[in-house]
Length: 279
Image 1 (cartoon, rainbow, N blue to C red):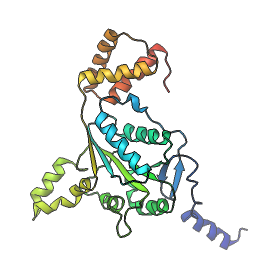
Image 2 (tube, rainbow, N blue to C red):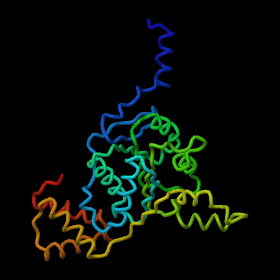
Image 3 (cartoon, rainbow, N blue to C red):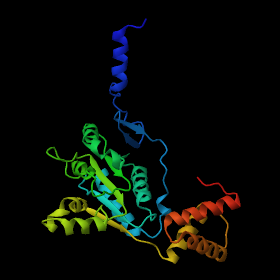
Image 4 (cartoon, helix red, strand yellow):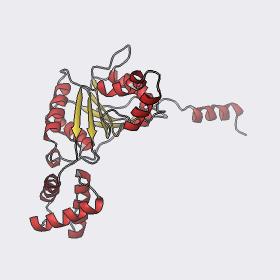
């Protein structure tokens, strides 16, 4: 018969497993943060698009690239909020900029943090603070609803609390909303509060804590066609300008909009029809 004390010890270990060993931050340049238990998962092969294929966002690209270079060199740099239209390359730009800076020989790592795990960010910052490396802490599709308290944890990243934000960490976030909360929520809280001006100030002010606001707006037809042509040329897909224009316009009409994501989906379909493999 199994020793009762051994069974109790095994049960306690399952409920509260021992902490994982410290991560090898030299293993690669990209990680994903997980909780329960806390650990950084290395990502040897990051899914990303080459920066040259990101068309129509030149200003945002140049601004974010320069800010990231400053940070990687140990110079002052700002947290950045990339906001705006869906599918216009916000998250692709963050990953492409990181790759470009690393390719220049500058030491920089990126850690992806899920919005749902923001409550653990203080523990993550403690882990990163002790490292000699420099980190982009990246949260994709960041937004908050009226009963969401995760925004309070975000302040630990942007302001750092009593310790201050670690000098070796910068925060980049993408969002469809400039103020990280829906407009109808802002209006509802203003209309029902005793002091409307203070009702939403705490949440709205989160976006003010980002030193860089980079806006992404829906592209026009010429921009959409330029995206498609860029992908086709890069991946060796042979199609005439006339056929590309006709087929791409029909494709975007069925999707009800134009964006970099829709352009990529069309190219994926076109490549499949032509038997061309994509990376």
